[in-house]
Length: 235
Image (cartoon, rainbow, N blue to C red):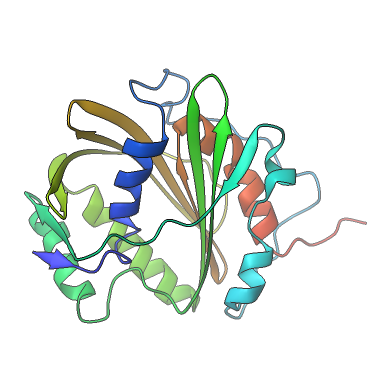
């Protein structure tokens, strides 16, 4: 089953992120913890927008180097791989791909994206995606896609002629917004493997998706949510 690469939470982009940017090997146990505690936002409660937010406005709400701190460099957006992506061994995800090919899937009208490289002990990457649409559409689409992506413990993604084995694990996430989803994906290809964590949070009519090295995602997901949301001042 083939489907367009911009749907299904940028599945092919995650594979590229894992195998070309992130460090290889296993993440440490603290990074994989499903009960990671994130600090409370100091400026007040979130007051999510009730109407969809434009792509231009979303772009201004993306994290930048100042938000992330020293050691982060923004990287150019990678071009989508040419051709389609084939999913093998996961009927639920294949079915979703078929729907995506005729206009369904995670393809909202308002979106903005950014990615960063962190020059720590080993090069790692962090990517953020913001999407906006009606609340019910965001909820249904994101829930459906995360459920599909974690419905099969292992499957293969073939981009061009390169097969990548994907192992998925649904993980718990702290109450960060109206709805939240999180998963760990292990990508293996050509003797290399890497773990990517992907956390999505809906705040009103905006969905924040943070992907990358598990420890970087845990460290910055609340910052991403705070910047993407409209915050009610406590003054």
